[in-house]
Length: 493
Image 1 (cartoon, one colour):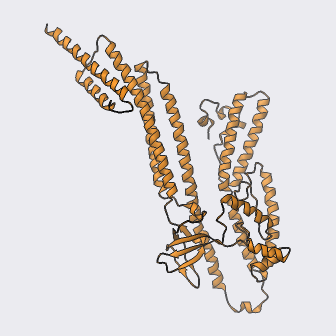
Image 2 (cartoon, one colour):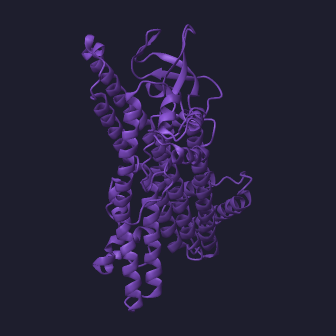
Image 3 (spheres, one colour):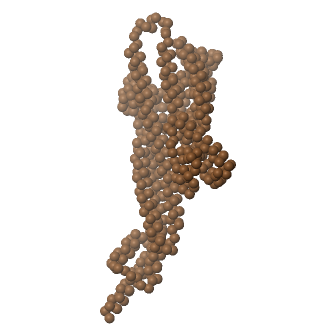
């Protein structure tokens, strides 16, 4: 990101000392730590800028321009941090899986347990988990494409509005009192603007095409108000039913075993409340994480300290979980063991923890039905992808298309108005002149006819100006005709 691309008439960072060249932020990292380090660096640049201003090395205007860029850099980093902070979730999942494997290795005292060989079953169960991990990439890809589509839409609209403003300001600066100069400038403006609009028209068409392939990710979060078309991403079988990869189903309920009826803000709030009172939940606090509610850290040291403290609490929590899981029992019994009293166990059963990785959280299951209606079952949400077009994305893309065409039409109207005024002034000068020298009367008359067709006076919006132009053209034709008649008569005599 170059300072000159944002403020064309303001100082470029590369013309300043090297300590401030980082304001251009040409490289933005792709990991959460990289963003935190870049944020630390922007904070350092801010303090360095203030120090140099206090010593009189920069003017207040230059400092204000650079401070605006630093604030913009922070905003960019903050917009990327919710994505990169997802890396912590995968670290927690890995920790959870490793913890589960270590716990299962614990020796069991019951000799009869070893009478059956479960090697094949154990292998198949882990393969199922691996399969779930594999198909989760489909959901990640859908989420990424969804977010990127709306980002590209917003970026396109802002770019369009900026280009329209620049084009409008340039068209206003054209002085129509000097036709020869005006024609060149107007021609240059129209050529550049049309080239830019053609490029943006291609971008609009790409957005329209992309919208048709966006997966409606938001339907995974909102309670469904109607059955949605879905597709199984992997095989899923139980003793009572079996669904196969690629099998089409209807998703009847996407909130089974979860509190999805609440909004996302309420979910985050309830999650933080339930986590604070859940003795079995290893809730890692990470800056920049939307679930944790903490902003992106401006100091890397703070993040490290938080991670260490969280790790200790997680180890304590995991040890409690292992102890409670060694003794078979239902959820209420486990909650009673983890809590301080039997009453707290009943409360935990009624209000299960909502944190994603808590072992006490109710599993997120989707109720699906086969197309023939012969089977209605609950399956893990990860196994199903909603297989419908995102109508909201398509509608949004067409709104942008309409906005773009309206802006283009308005710009063309401005150019046409400028063209009519320029031609009117040019033809008026010809009429006022004593003699109009034309190398080819046929070519000139053809030009006049094309101008008349290009600016029809029947148009309600621009009819008055076009009619005046038509009258000028008629008078100019008559003047040239009389001029040629006198010339022929003179030659004959």
